View (spheres, rainbow, N blue to C red):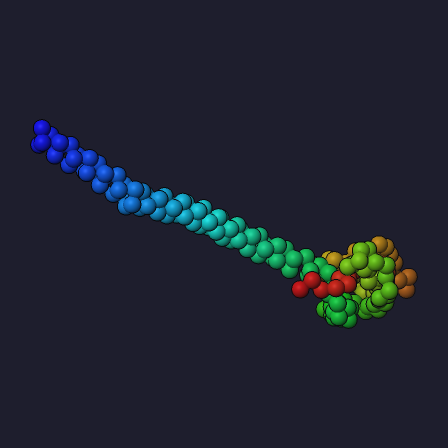
Length: 180
């Protein structure tokens, strides 16, 4: 019986040691493991979010590059601030290129279409042979800037020459402020 009591005492002692081991060692380690697991999940979520943001950033960057290209093309159709005289000189150069006598009358006080765009009203009187006047009109059409013609009058000189007179009333468009 003594040996049974001794075995029972050992068993109780073993159970008590196991319980102490569980309470003081295994339980804290398990708690630490759980806390580490929760932190890992949180960091994983943050990492996924940052990865998604980088993907969104790359997509936004591509969209910005595309928008910038469109803006560059769009700005070419307008006369930028300070380039009004350069545009008038282009019109004069076209006249010289196509052997047309041209007088260009700009009105820089044209009406505003929007807060950023206003009209540069233009009157052009040109004289020359018909093929040269047609080439001049085609040159005006091929300019990168928009030049709208409101009225075009072509008259033939009655003196028996092959000279025609061309009168154009139109406008180009000024960008009031540069967006670059």
